[in-house]
Amino acid sequence: MKIWIADTNTPAYRQVKFHNEQHSGYEYLGDLDDEELKSFLLNLQDSMDIEKNMKLLKYYGYLHLFIINKS
Image 1 (cartoon, rainbow, N blue to C red):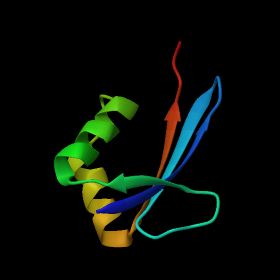
Image 2 (cartoon, rainbow, N blue to C red):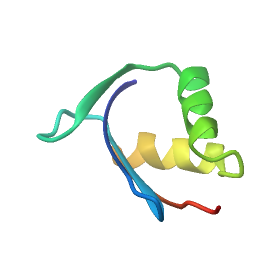
Image 3 (tube, rainbow, N blue to C red):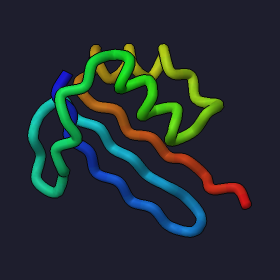
Image 4 (cartoon, rainbow, N blue to C red):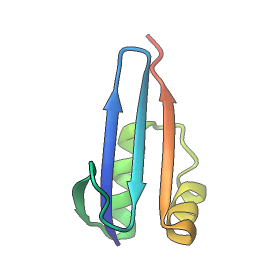
C-alpha cells in the first residue's frame, strides 16, 4: 500500500498522519506491505493496537495518530 506521511514531533507529543493518496505537506513513505507497516507502527508505539489501526487505514484511506511522549 502506498503511504504518504506527515510527522510532527514535539517534547510533549507526536502527531503522525498517514494517507493513501498524495497530499501537500506530506512526504512519500513508500509502498509498504502489511509486515513493513506493522513494523513501522510498532516503532511509533509498542503498545498500539496494530490490527485495528491497519484496518482503519485500509478502510478510510487515512489514519491520524496522537502519541503522548512520556518521560
